[in-house]
View 1 (cartoon, rainbow over the protein chains, first blue to last red):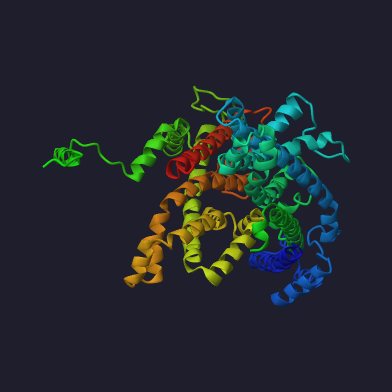
View 2 (view 1 turned 30 degrees about the horizontal axis):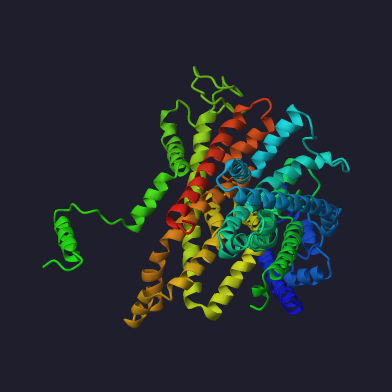
Length: 307
Length: 306
């Protein structure tokens, strides 16, 4: 198990490096720069600015400079919000994005697993139909539309929860954003869980368990749940990436102070440092979670470990 | 000459029936699949709705008194008004909402079509090559897919769109280039099993080149899973496109797409509800029906659970 884990950790390093490189160069291929404003800057000022941010060096040299600093945890300066370094801006937003993302991730996964299992156990009965309908709603309503509808219904008409903003933390401000993120995640998880659970319930070893007289609960708890979890666990990695993408929208719609809030405007302003920093941070979160998922997978399915 | 069991008599009779085309006919796999699909009510209704939406988007504009970019100065921010010909109201600029919804649906459908095609082509070629050659080639190629899976690809799309400007063609290709991963995995898995079959061996024995085997013998046999997964990709792509449009990175004014319409409608939904309801209903029903069709096709073509 230790060997497996260390191999996975090692293989994540080149992935991270490739992604950082790709991101850096794609961004630099773009026409335009961070200092293109409505009003053209005097050439001397522009030259000085470019020199200050090392933009006048050859691209390859800039790249090594950037990676070198990155390894020391320095994301460089933001070129548009020049009172802050990128690390400072991300550091302010990170706890919030993590809290939002992980609470949605945990709630969504649990809700999805329970719903999927219930649905499979009651296959083609009323509870199954109702759950499948709800899952469909979660799957097909895009998160920005769901956000608008929830804001309107629960924030404006019913006035149960605040429709946006974040005044240093009441849970009420989190209810709607988390719900928007939970629904699609729970939907996808439930769909997978239902499918794999139905498949597992049709296998011979479940029939054997029934034949030797085990009760329904015991069969589910001891024999059915663990193998049914496998496809769901392998979805959790991509699932988290969906969630983080969703958090980009949710942070914008609900005006929340996460790391996704500035991403779009930073990309439009060619704020190289901030765009790269945000992408890299998202990527590291996703890589870390994928690693965790792989390890859980190996624990659930011993075949994987020796592969 | 009837044998002991009377088998010959039965066979002779059957042969006679065959001559007069009176015998029960065999059913091909395609016919089987079609029957299963037709029996699936949800899928059939969904196909009807999708056809209706396509007609609505592409034929509908010819029956409207207003075009999507025409400004009606006497009707700005007006609720539906049948006398003026604004069947779904007007937006803040006095443009007819119904015409805009039709144009937006058109745009979303075109993006979905082109991007799906791009993703299918890349995914099938990539997956078939990885699966057929196997070994190191396979390991490297699939490792790359794993890497792409782990990346927050929507951020890359955003960066790409921002960089190369809001060019619709780029939008199609960009989304297509990023949605092929699952297709490649599925195709590779299928190829791995198909390449062990006898007909591939026969082709190899008769001296066909690797490329001929891949594209003449293996790829045609992948039709089932590819069709299923392509149908499931369409709603994903429509979602991605509407997501980008919602962020203001999609097509440019005065053209529009469903995501753009929703992004304009959402902030004013309290006072001008018709600006949100129309595009939202079209988008959600389109996505819902496409998902049902995908599920229906999967059940029909891949009857594993039966």
